[in-house]
Length: 95
Image (tube, rainbow, N blue to C red; front, side, top):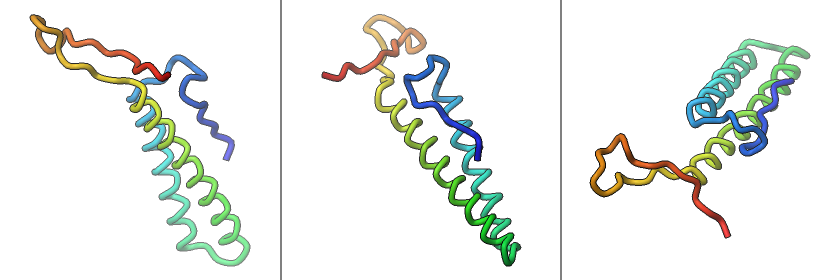
């Protein structure tokens, strides 16, 4: 596969929605290769299995990125005296 998911932090355009969409896309591609493996035979089967394995690697990578994003972005509760839409988001400091 030629699709590359950049690690979280390598770019500043990732949001949870984009990471979830990439993970969903990776799962869909993996599922398609699994279907192909079920109907393929001979050398086609071996090629499909290789593609399926690469697709699984991408599923794992996108899930890791999503989990990492969720671990560092924290949704804080509402601020005293403010309604829910005024709650703040922030990054949890590591150190």
